[in-house]
Image (tube, rainbow, N blue to C red):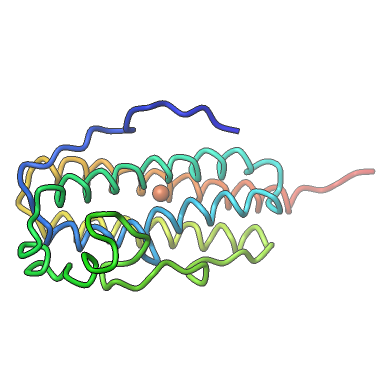
Length: 189
Ligand SMILES: [Fe+2]
């Protein structure tokens, strides 16, 4: 159960119409290391992870949906005024034919999202290491996206998201230690 606050987690501003950048940003919308994959992965793991880290998965999984919303807003703002010719020049001609200006869960190459991007092993250490890797990959992707644009407003929002991935990776590493400590604890009956 969640309460929805009708504002973005962090402001999204763009300084120009830039469908080329929108095409790249979609990687974080429906790509293997993107926000949808992260949110679904963490929220799904809650049901079989030890109680001590359920809250962490809930918090971070929910936050990833807030990040998904930010990416969607970026893509929308970068493309809303683009002409068909501009979309085609940016490599979005096939997207336009299929979806007009609508967003779609796909990666930057146009491959639709698949649940095969994520795993659920049922082993807390295995799952948490996947989560750490997911955060590090998302952080790296945000860095490459920041490098691809000279729009300082867009960079500002992307830097926020990059920092959140760093924090998430730290928190998942802490969760691994909590689980390991718990496993090492002597149980006296
Ligand atoms: Fe994250």
